[in-house]
Length: 283
Length: 183
Image (tube, rainbow over all chains, first blue to last red; front, side, top):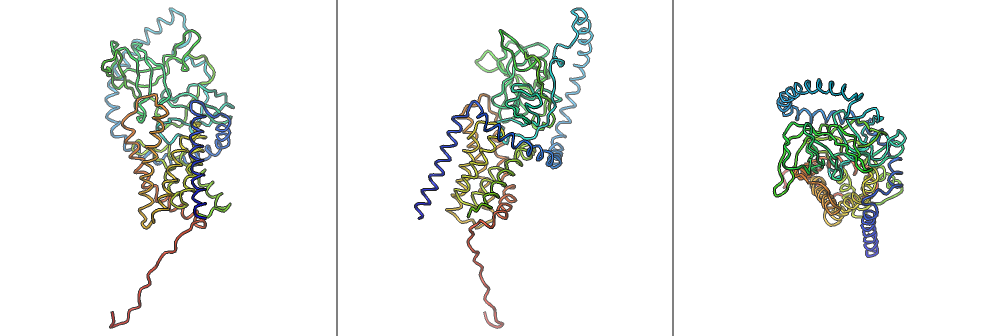
């Protein structure tokens, strides 16, 4: 009797392990489609309810955490203010020059984010991945709201990520801090181009890679999406979306490239309301 | 654990509630830049209460649900949590839990095991980005949080599943009546 029980246990365990490996093998690299979409569709109303019900408790704990951080942030912001003031003065001059140049070339809208081409859909984050390895969030807007796979997602501060999959009333976003994320971007002013990749485990740090070591990049510069287009291919992100601020730049030894570290503008760890840029032309 | 249809329904409800709470609450609340992961603690508690099979099946099911809801490659969370649940159940079958500190310490150890397991799985599947050393801090803080979260989780689950638990009767020593003048 006991031996039979042990055999049955071992069989179940073996079956579960084989099942896990099979699932991994079959679905790695591409989603399992119907099954995951079905489960997500069933659970998304429950997630919306849970998200709203738990918001006060989340806010309370968030308040404690932010109070700890506030002291350090205060001194950092003070030093940033001095730099930004200088940049603002330079910016005013650039604006005047820009207005004159616009008149010359008869441009009627900004070159950065061609907002009129995109229709922003506002969504709320209802769930988040429990591990830093898969940096994903779930939104309460989906294909029913016009959201499509590969639509860029922004917050009030800057780029957040890209839509990875959609269901009727929900969608999953791969954040720019996910290990699978890569965003083509450039440093402004200067226009030095590279690819933004995450530093897995540190949501406060992104790495702008593949930058020519001869180009000079310094702290405080802004990084925006470059939004390239070439031979029928185009970047998934429109040009000019702010991504982050350069914190440091270091030349990789024995390589002709340098790594630029930047701090994302968007508060990736505490996302709540975001906008999905639907429609529009990429690149 | 004697799994009747009613207990099965309770276990299913516990799994769904745990996953919803993790994705909608714990993953989105950060303390010292790290969010808590209650799922290993829930699976460990179920393993400690119900044995290796209950732990393994609960781990697999909870992991599968997380994989489905996050639209991640299926099987990753399932495999790690299955191992966690099985080990917790095996511990319960081999050793006696005679101290209230055992469940939190087991949760702590197996949460670290889960974090390392998940990291190993990701590395095997291929991480296409540099990995920060801060990931070690994240793992250690998650392990510490698990210690404190294990108390309410283990005792709450024990209360919810009490009718199904096969518990050995407690041996209570009766004090010998003392008579004045004698020892």
